[in-house]
Length: 250
Image (cartoon, rainbow, N blue to C red; front, side, top):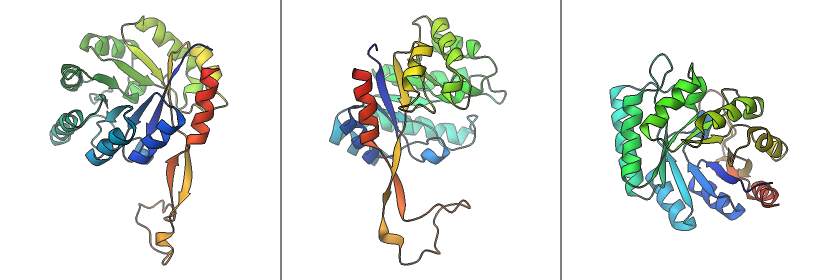
């Protein structure tokens, strides 16, 4: 198998530390992975950079539920982007759409220029998977100078969208990087790489870790109406990802 770069989707500084321990090449740092990933705290970025020194791309997403933001939300995203770059982010990950699902070229251009002028990368995330015409979307992103786009091939799981991802890579013709992600596991990784012809992949693999501090009152929940268990949290599974890293090396 050719050399394929592995990026891990992380939701905390500890996630980045575990991804680094597993041998991952790059991390995408978020908060709130349950909602697809939101802007991380500066503290988590600072600690992750200090403890690992690895390349960390920071998500800039002010809220869950779509990618067409209010003026205040976008203004907050710009301020977050400025601070993340100032505190060591190796790039920004973002996605701005118009109400009809097309790429918002104006807002995308602003964050792209911020990242590139700082010598960092600009990554357009899976917002592209809900655009009505991915070719037109890629044309816009290429014209703006975006470094890379993360995509599942406009399917819920990239294992179902490998044909489209391959078409994207061929259409891009080196003008923009195509990063397949969503649903990649140790079982389907080699097939996805072979079917897409990609040179990099994006994935997450978490395990549950116990935290007994809430055991005194199990009727209390701090989350929303789904009522997740309060006595555990998710952490990147370094052993699982380490196995994938070894498979990629071999």
